[in-house]
Amino acid sequence: MDEPLVSVVMLSFNNIEIIGNCLSDLSNSTFKNIETIVLDCASRDNSASYIANNFPWVNLIRFKKDPGPDAAYTYGVKQAKGSYILLISADVRVLPNTIASLVKRAEISSLDVAVPSCLDWDGVYANAGLGWPFFHVHEYDLFSVLLPKLFSSLKEQRPFYFIFACCLVKREAYIETPFNQNIGFYEDIEWAWRLDLKGKKIEVLDDVYCLHERGSSIKGPRAYYFNSRCVFATMLVCAKTDEIVFLSPPLATFQISELLFEILNGRYKNAVNIVKGWSDFLKLSPAYLKDRKTLFSSLSKKNSFNFLQRYVEAENYKRKREHLAYKRMYFQTAKTNSK
Image (cartoon, rainbow, N blue to C red; front, side):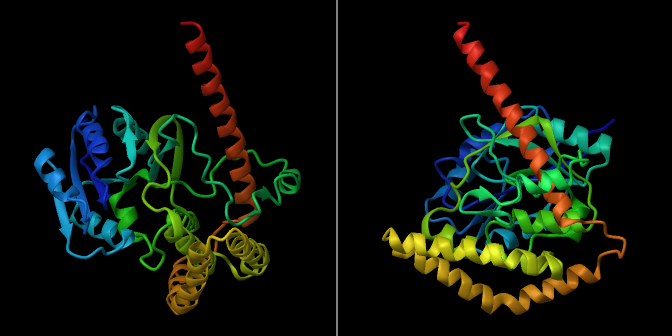
């Protein structure tokens, strides 16, 4: 059986210190039927020239002005020829068999999206994909005890969302449900939520890994800005009316508490960016409401998405991943001590 063509679509924005690692990993992949598209979003660190000189097999697309991650990814997918798209960040390391394993599972299970388990660069499980920030206020989980008891019969294990720092998606699935260009960063939650609402088949694979240096693409005040903007935006686009009523108080409490914390600690630039994020959310709210109308008008009346049920599934997922992470650390320690 011939291998399907996989189009790797990668963003580059001032990543000269790390992007070579990811591109070298791709060249060492056991899966060979790939094309690699790198979208340089107006980098100022000479990384575009670095890529052109050292990785001539890359299809390098240079933007004169940064279009933003969502628009750049969508542009790259439209240029891609593969039936599968591997969306990947420049701060990701993949193993030689990562792509082959993702494609194999996607083909066997007819997946729309196949996602590897994401570890930090030091090998520790990146504990994301849960209910945050929609259930976490002041770093504790409001419902970690109550809801699992109410849904004690629920054995499903799925993340609330997945990290698309590395994920394999069918090209037609992305074209049908592209990234929301009104979100910006932290679009993982909103995109995964929309895919879930549309009933797309998504699986996070226990036995396939990538390494991701979380936070390398966005840090400092800019991270506070997008976090304060995208949380409410995601809720407005994806949540049903009763869910918005249920979620708004804890979300507002969390955001206001974060603002006060930054002010009290003298981090005024972070505080200003939190307020700016709220302001821009309000300015963009007509666009989010339009996105919401488009989304819900396309959904089947039989849509079975249950917010609280999905949260408990995410809790089960978290506990399983914590157990797997403990086992990995245990065996790594045992192996080190045996030397």
